[in-house]
Image (cartoon, rainbow, N blue to C red; front, side, top):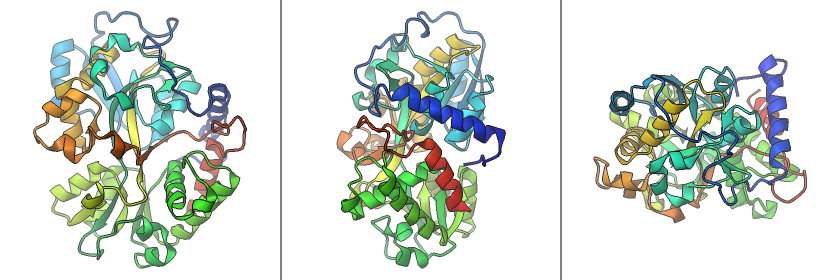
Length: 399
């Protein structure tokens, strides 16, 4: 987390989190429910008109590249300008400036964007390629609120366990190497951890598997006892952490230079390092590239700014980025499963979708997609630790 107590931006976070709780308490943490594909008739666009000639986006690195943006510009006349963000918190901050038309938001940002009134409902009827998006990506708690769609699924992936194969032997099949104090101590100062409060869910997921008496079901829905156990585990881990990374390029540099040996990563860094000849390995293929406890992960959603200056171009983009060819291109470039069913027929690697389990719903049931923690976690009580608690605890963990 980049903000600290006493910072004006930090104060704004408190307001945003309160708004999230207030808005979603009625619907419960489940969100989703049955979807009204047209969204809100008062706010969602009802017809796509002529493009405005410009489109300003916020995205994860690797999502907006010339290979698929140039053809989009030629077809629509919408010139793309992209701002890459390193964290979900940065994306929310950038959206607050009002300078952008849309954002590729992960699940730990979407509820905040909706609650703060920064994004508008999406009329999926105006996005023809939405029809063939994988069904288990539609109407989910992180892209649909009170039955209204607030975005278009882009792609998904798991947070991998990555290590240097020359330094870590035997190959681990569990997050023990990062969370078990004795095992992690072997790599003291060489462990790489994602710098975001959502990482608390990684510890909770580990405890769900290894401490069943805590009765953790959803690692983003934690009561005080469960939350305290996760925080204690992360405080123990902190002594062995060599870096908390928020930018992919920095983690790539750290692994390439030997500054870190093992850590949580995205597919993007893994493939970049492999391309540079660094002897990295990732979560065991024998377990479908997931450690035995499972993994946290992301399912990203393209959302349109409530006051987008170029709404027609944004709708054109949302339809383009999930078109079969474009979605295949971005999925292969970034290293994630596509959102579009038909993309699997367009990948250069004919085995790509099988390697990324794109068409395997059972695989994704072992991935805990990022969510925004809420006090009301679906049981009708306000007994879960909310986003404010997570942010405060994460700041304390890092010291």
